[in-house]
Length: 254
Ligand code: 8X3
Image (cartoon, rainbow, N blue to C red):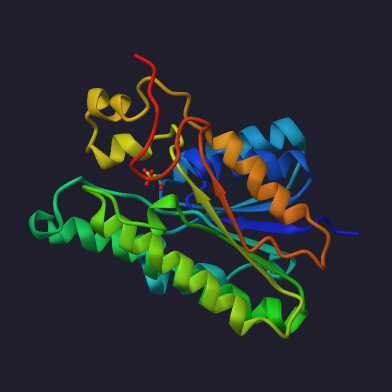
C-alpha cells in the first residue's frame, strides 16, 4: 500500500518545516509548498537522505491564486490523492495600532493567512470529498480567540481561520473528512522576527523569562490530531507554554 500524502504550505521554516520532518519520520509522502526554490530543494534533499521518503516540492506563494491553481492542477497523477492538507503558511507584520497600520502589509497578512488558506482548501477539498478521505489541519492561534494590543489585523486573520475551520467542519459533517484548528500561543520561530521586521532584540524580548513552545512541539501536536483513529475528529487544540495563560498574560522569570 502506498504511504499517505501530506501537503504542507509554508514548509521551509518554523512549524511547517517541523511538520515536514515529523510526517517524513512517520513515512508519509510529502508535498512541500514554499516560495523559495533553493530552500525547498535543500529540505527535500535532507528529508530524502534522512528517511528515504518521496518528496515533491511545489513552488508558489499561496497569495498567488493562479499559481496555486496551476501547481495543484498539474500535480502528477500519483501525487493527486492528498490525504492531509496542513494550511500552515502565515505571518504577521508589525505591531502598530489598527488606525496606524501599513495597509500594504495588512494586505500581505490577510492575503496569506486568510485568502491563501481558503485557496488551498478550495483546491484540495473537492478531491478529498470525491475520495471520501481527508483531513484539513489549519494553523490558527490563540490570537484568534481574543485580540491583544498591537495584534489587531493578525488577530482578525486568526479569528477568520477559526471561522473557516468551523464552517468547513459544518460543511463536511456528512463526510468522513476531518477538520482541525491548531491554536498555538508563543512558539519560538522566525515568526516574531518577521513581526518586528528583522529586529532581533525586539523579537527575542517576546520570549524573555519563559520557555516558549518549539515548532517541534506544534508538529507533534499536529501529528497527534492526524494520527487519531478515523472516527475521532480533534476539532481544536489550544497549546501554550506552561507560563502563558492568555494572549496577554504570561509569567516571566526575572
Ligand atoms: C502566534 C501566537 O501569541 O504571538 O500566533 O499571537 S501569538
